[in-house]
Image (cartoon, rainbow, N blue to C red; front, side, top):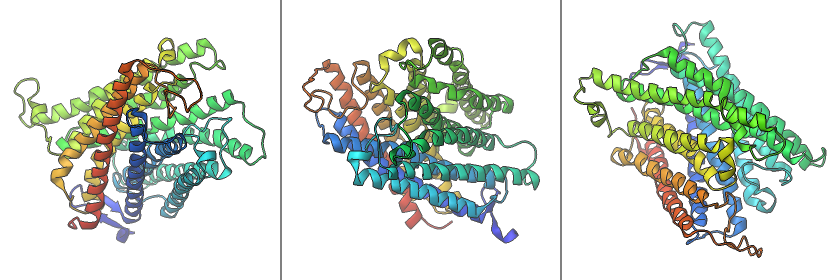
Length: 504
């Protein structure tokens, strides 16, 4: 009905009010999860910095587990659900397929997120088994049930988005093919469906095992099934992040891709090939053949890398062409020097591309090569890689779009605009130092998961690393403090805007 919509005076979009409410609640919950995860990240970083070594081993593993779930899971996915609803309903001038189903999905995700945090906090001896939850480590049934509830809620939200696309097409609320940003969101949704189904295949039997109903998993089989969920879940983030890159290029400078077919083909490559990169988690396992490893980590993986490189040319090209159309044509880089750097969304976009592409992308290609993987496997370089991709690239992109969501969806003027100019830089530089510090320490063999890398908890296996390793751990600690400050500043600006921002 007409009374269920409002027209945005800035974009001209028809905004479905029930969808708008779901966008708001998912986005707010995402920011809360970001803040919780950032606090855990600071504690973990100050523990890995051996000079400080803040936490005892049990507390360290507890906070590593919570950091992983709140940052890789809850912050990212709650925000992605908001993005899906925005892309499916608002950008297509359509009604959301089922607002009631949207609230069911949100409730399941919230219960799952709270349950995961509560079970780990109240019983870390059993449940602090980290994001990977590797068998034969056995958590309590409540832990697995919480994660499964969250995943089911996310899957329902994805199907709600897909149904919205069907309604928009049936009711002809838009003309032509799907807008590129919506096409990118659809790519993320398609990857999400297969990913979450594999998550159920990994965690439902594990839940039954923890309840004493089913026999234990073979550890190698569990790893193979789990990584069909664990790594592709981050590829959902990559597809959503790049869709936001295109949106931010348009919102900040009016940039549009110079070739729709080129960009859509790159998204299609993601659907077909990006999950192949899951193989790099299994390169030291004996359960898969060398031929499979070599194929997946060389010829096949490069098709996914090609897709990212295509986007890496298309988005900056869109920005450059838009700037040159404004008359910024002197020299090679006037279009860049005179870009809107005081717009935090633009700086977040540029930093997202740099951190994701150079720190995350290049390190991923190196670590995902079979011949080199053994050098990095289970060292701190591995989380150094994904702190460049997901923690850095995706988070910066989501922060950038938030500065448009606040006035356009929440209809509030941003509070602290002068601070917002610097916020992406503080977080971006901090997370870059985290990634660099982790990768540098990993080169010297510093292990990925251990709370105490010198005496290994007093086990008698004392080891002294090359002094350079401790320098890189200090870089990690300093970067962690900066990244925490940037995340805290982002959360404070968002909350202050919601509470004190002038209504638009």
